[in-house]
Amino acid sequence: MTTGRGGTMPQTDTDDRREIAPARLPETYAHCAELVREQDQDRYIAGLYAPEDRRAALYALYAFSLEIARVRALVSEPLPGEVRLQWWRDVLEGQAGGETQGHPVAAALLDTVKRYRLPVAPLTALIDARIFDLYDDPMPSLRDLEGYAGETASAVIRLACIILAGGRDPGGATACGHAGVAYALTGLMRAFPWHAAEGQVYLPADILARNGVTRDDIVRGRGGPGVLYTLKELREIARGHLKKLTSLSESIPSGLKPAFLPVALVEPYLKRMEVGGYDPYRTIITLPAWRRQWVLWRASRSR
Image 1: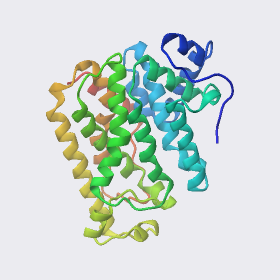
Image 2: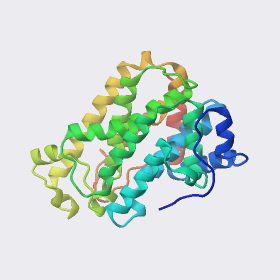
Image 3: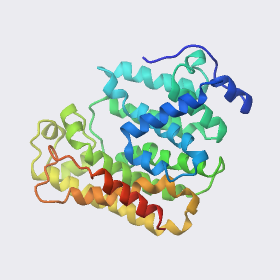
Image 4: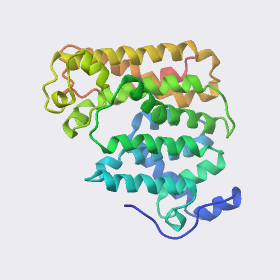
C-alpha cells in the first residue's frame, strides 16, 4: 500500500492548508495535473477551459478519481485492494494521520476539499462504489449499473461544479446525474476489451439474460450476437441520458460548462461503435487527439 510520511491532516481552513504541504503544495497540484494529462486526456483538455484559478483543484479531483479507479490494477487479490480503498476513506475522514503528506494526490485533494468546502460523503461513496471493481461479480442489473455510474462519474461532475462555483452549491444535480451516467456507460463500453480479458463484466445481467448471454460467455470471448445486442441497447440508454441532459442545458450556468465538457465526446465515441466491422472484443474505440480537441473546443463555445 502506498503511504507517506510526516504531517497531519488539516482541521481548519487557510492555516491548515499551509500545514498540509508548506512549500510543496504547488508540487502536489502539479503532480495531479500531470497524472490527469497522462491518463485521462479528455478531462485534462476539458480542464484547460476552466478559469486558471480553478484548474489545479479540478485536476486534484480528477487525479483522486483516477487513483481509486486503478486500484484493481495495482493488486493481485481483492483484499489488498480493499485495504487501499480503506486508506483513502481514512484520509478523507481524518484518520490517516501523518501518512497524508507523502501522497501528493491525497495532499492536493484534502487542500481542495478544505478550500472549496467539498462534501466528503460523495467522495467516500465513490470509494465504496469502486469496491465492485475488485471482484469478478457480474453487474446485477441496469439499475445497479446506473447507480454505480451515478456514484462515480456523476459525483465527479457534481464536485467539479462546486469547485467551478467557488465552493458554493450551484444546483444542477439532476443534470450532473444524467451527464455522468452517459459518460460512464460509454467509458465502460469502450473498456469492454480490457474488462472481458480481466474477467470483469459491467454489462447488466438482466439485459444480458434477455439477449441470451451469460458472464461466462463474455469472459470466454463467445458472447456472439447477444453481446452486440446488449451493447446496442446500452448505447441507446446512454443517448437517453444525453437527451435528458440536453433538455436541462438551459438550467446549467455557463460557468459550470468545463465540468460537463467531456460529455461532448460521448456521441462521437458511440458512433465509432456503430462503424462496420466493430468487434467489441478487439476494436479500440478512440478518436484522434486533434478531433477530441476540436469536439471539446466546439462544445466550449456552444450552449
